[in-house]
Image 1 (cartoon, rainbow, N blue to C red):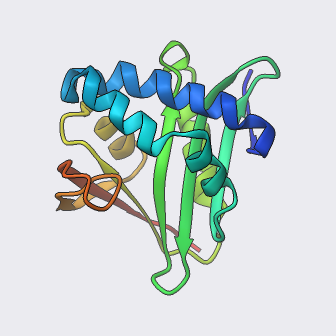
Image 2 (tube, one colour):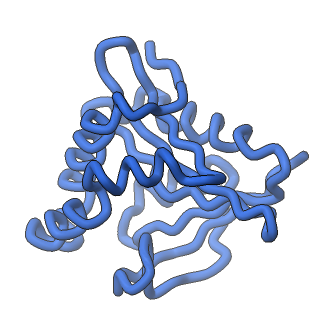
Length: 165
């Protein structure tokens, strides 16, 4: 059984492994192996994960069963906009379907009590992710040409959920 907890510096290597495994399994069919490896190196390095762990207004969570980290989630809050941006929610391919994504998502929703909305950017071809987010109350509210990072050149859908206070 997995439980959700805050990530710490001791989790960085394992978080990276979750991100690498999940990105390779999910995005290689969309972008090709070379592009996925380029993105992994830029977005999911240990330095990038450490920076997110230390980011003011951020919350980094892991789903842990005591032996394995099965999933990760990272979100940040912009108080001026009252919006939480969900930057990462990934579950190891072999752990998908166990409720880990649901539990991480639910915890992120509670981490920012002043927030009024939660948004995420997702590749329009990632139908399992879109289905997951829609099943959890999110709806398409826009599109971007730079999904995930500024200047990424990756098209994406913007999904949003209103949060109750």
